[in-house]
Structure formats: structure tokens, C-alpha cells
Image (cartoon, rainbow, N blue to C red; front, side, top):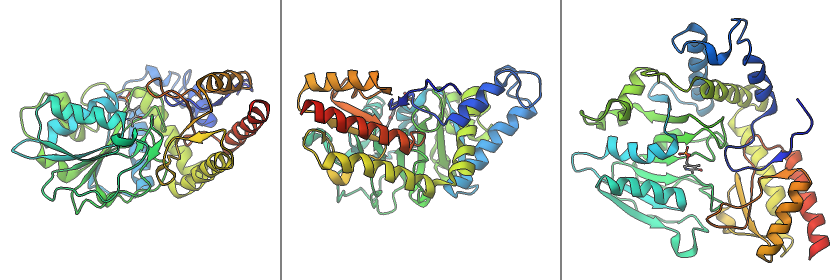
Length: 362
Ligand SMILES: *Cc1c(COP(=O)(O)O)cnc(C)c1O
């Protein structure tokens, strides 16, 4: 691997583990001795069957789930899931609860609205620019599902604990923190995650759906938009995004065999977050934007004393091999995305740079 790779803090598509990139590089010419590239073989072939089935098996082991869950690989990104969830689950007078914690939640709510699907926004943190995760939410007992965004990529907040819904299944957009910590899967009816933040390249969205959720689906939906199509065909009703699925498989293998599972991954993520937030808490030069108890361990958003100073910070960081620190264009400021594949050493380098920059500019 060339040593000119930067410390990559991009929000997504984002950094991936180096051993994964290396293995993918080798497979691009000759996949497991079949003398063809991984992108040149049929999705109906035995080698690819092994890839997708291994990815599913690893997902189930990492999340400790059994056959009551289906692991799907779909296209259209997390954004299509915003529309598919209400389309599949909200017929026959059923309604869903939504919690609005930022840009992506707002988009999810809008897709239920467009389809005229009954829904209630039971809580929102919009009053303070989405700087916190709402507490003590009252969910409707008869809601079909309760939708949350587990990690708010743009606003830099994350659910530390999942809410008590009184038994209503959670449907969670986990695009930016999927596989970053263990989950109590008994709370979830469905999880979805665009791969390009934490588990692979762009082009595939993972959907983990509990079997009983499939019973809610009405007949008559377009084939590709009906979860049952994909659950019954092992995500191969049509040609799946083979290369993206292959890379997800490699990331899951890395999580299991190199990292040692989700509890270990969480420990490392916590250590990285503690280092970066801990440093910022000792200065007033850098101001985290999220409330302390709502801070994201994946996307660390912060401000400097002025916008000009932020521009200078981002430019000098780039010169020092620290990339992707610009905040989302809708909110400005700075953001360090420290997903699973961002190493503790890289976060240390960032903190060192921040300390020096403050000394020179405060
Ligand atoms: C990036 C992101 C999305 C959008 O994902 P696409 O795969 O681009 O549709 C949705 N939700 C969250 C939380 C995200 O971070």
C-alpha cells in the first residue's frame, strides 16, 4: 500500500480498512484463482454465491441474530428506504411515529408525507438546530413502527441509548453508525444503512428486516419496491451491485477477524471519541456543536472562533495530510468523521495538529 494515503476524515464515501482495499485490489484481476475479476463473474455463479452468503452469515453473527431476520442488499441508497418503509408497512389505516433529529430524519418524514401515509412526528430537536437527541418521548402504542436516525451525520449527534417505544418496533436509519457498536436487535423491526459511511463503498444499502414485518406488506407494489421480492430471492431478483457487496463482505470479515467483533469495535470508537472530545473540552478555541450527552462517536462536529479561522484550519490541515474536515455545506463549520476504519493513530495526529494550530492562532 503506498504511504501517500492521507488521514481521511471524509463523511461519506469514507475511509475503509487498508487490508480490505488491498484484498479488493488483488481480486480485481483474479478473484480467488478463477482467472477472472470479481467484477467479471456472474452473480449466479458459485464464487459470488459464496460472497453474498458469507456476508449474510457474518452480519448475523456480528449482530447475534437468527433466521427471524433477513439480510438484504438493495440499491437506491438509504434515500430509497425513506420511501420504501412507509410504502411497505403503512397500508390498511396503519400509522408510524417519527423522531426528527436532523437533515436525514426530515427527508425520511418527507417521503411518508409525499405518499400520504399516516404518521406522527412524536419528537423533534429542531428548536435548537438539532444539537441534541430528544428524551422521554411518548410513542403511540398503536404505531406500526417508530422511525429514528441512529446517528446524525450532518448535525453530529447520536442516540446513546435507544428509546423505549413500549414494544413498537424501531425502524432505524443507521447509515452512519451501522456496525459501530453491539445492538439489542430485539428492539428493531428493520435497520437500513447505505454502505458508503461505515461498511463499504457506495452502491449498496444493507437492510436487516424482521420476518414478521414482511407480513404487513400489501400486494400490488412494484416488484422492485416490495421487500418480499428481495427477501425471497436472496437479494438476487435482478443483478445486485456485486462489487459493493464483495467489499462489504471484506469489511465484515475485517470486523469479525481483525477487530474481534462489535464490542471491541465500540471500545475503539469510544477511545477515539474520548480523545478528540476530551481535547476540545479543555479549550474554548474548538467548540463541539452537539450537547454533551448527544455527541456522535462517528461524526465530530465543531466550530472555531470565526468562519475565516475555520477556512484557515481546513486549508492547513489539508496541507498536513488531514483531509475531509469541512462541515456539511448546509451547516458549515468543521467535521471529523471517525468511522470504524479511522484509526486511533489518525485521531491522535488530528489532535496534535489541532493543538499546534490553536497555539499559532489563538
Ligand atoms: C448519507 C446518509 C443518508 C443518505 O444515504 P444515500 O445512500 O446517499 O441515500 C441517509 N441517512 C444518513 C444518516 C446518512 O448519513
